[in-house]
Length: 321
Image 1 (cartoon, one colour):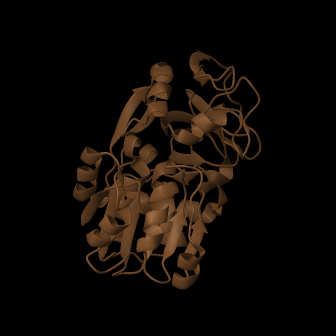
Image 2 (tube, rainbow, N blue to C red):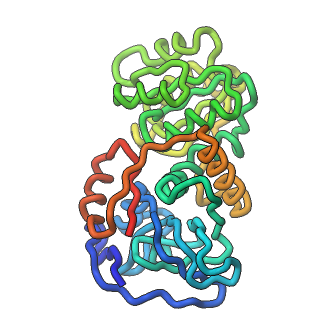
């Protein structure tokens, strides 16, 4: 069968022949319908990913939507989402015509959502929805700041905050065009993070109601400004470092405001919570409450897709057969 194959760490995958996966105890075999390409896939391929990398050569892809070929849980032909239990990290991933996944991570994909959206809302959707709905638990009327609102995760986070009843949502990021898109997705105001006086500009955008929840996929100086702006007792959910791996937070601000900093990773969430969250996402997508900008890329073009992902594509790239 055809598959994307990594033959050396730090190098992009190329299309190659690979043996068909075999059904085994605890493992299902799926026929690929769509699989999101994620920054984590490139990190795994670096050979230095904190959660490990498969031995070479291997097939990348930490998530995928597929049709069941063999499964102890689901009938053949059932459409399911798979991510976790080492998929694309400890063993071959989803970027192949057929792939194996652990039975216990499979979540049925209900009707009303096409393959592209179901795949695009996997890792990306969960990274946006779970920090706000499951970890920080946004309450109706709260003010929410989304740092990184111009990325795929951030754009879903803006919509998630709106669904959860946030009273005011401010999106922050670098790309002016994508900030306009954040307004279309439900942000009440947007702020460009470049330039002086970011804390003051964030404060103005909240119009006297400082954020009680900060969704942070950036870290670095934007988080420093957000902490200075945040309300007393604010919860800061941290899940990325696009603006830098370190941030300097004044002890007085953290103590004086009694800020809560909550680290988040999809990999650390219990599987039953992931399954519930993914079903919630699909339900909101089917009802038109969540939209995602996604582009289908054929498996044969995986090398080009990999290069685009490395540059930051501005849209969610999804590998299809």
